[in-house]
Length: 195
Ligand code: ADP
Ligand code: MG
Image 1 (cartoon, rainbow, N blue to C red):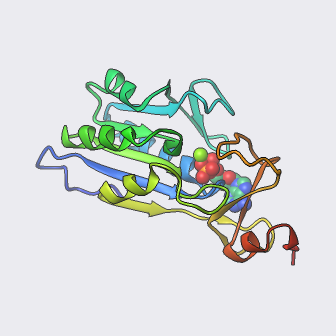
Image 2: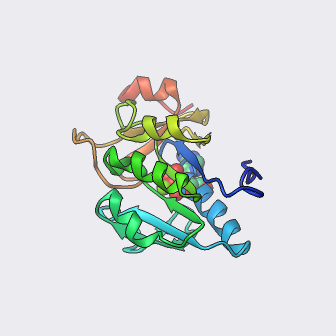
């Protein structure tokens, strides 16, 4: 369990935390947990998500277990600067949908003394590193990889298996389009059978 570090207590340094993993691994849940703790500590929190992600709600960030927090949908990473002026903590969900400029934005926010918490998919549906996520992980002080339960065999799952034949990298959707799978069942693909 991630516990807030005290490296900012006597200084005014910022830092970057990355929460990564496959679909259904609890990234959003963990992001919301950290942000709500910061709010309890009366820190000013701003939350951002890409405007394309309207699966559950136009503005809220919502986890698969229906936990929610109000957020600002944005179209490009630099818009974060417009809304994050006086906040102490900036949260970003679904970071993999932003282009590489999100890395520089996060670095600038952290250099300016903010705590930046970024959640996103570390791999796409083909098991390849997803867009800006590897670079974000490299510049972060803290990286937490969370896991799901394999929908086939119950092992630890870190892959998002696409159940539909669509080939595009971005296909929004939930249980009808994706399931969490362990390495073995992901590699077996359509041949994987439930134990
Ligand atoms: P993420 O943001 O990583 O997609 P969420 O935080 O939105 O994940 O949702 C995590 C929740 O999803 C879990 O607490 C659980 O209720 C639910 N869930 C659905 N399928 C699975 C699975 N295969 N493994 C683990 N949790 C799952
Ligand atoms: Mg999520």
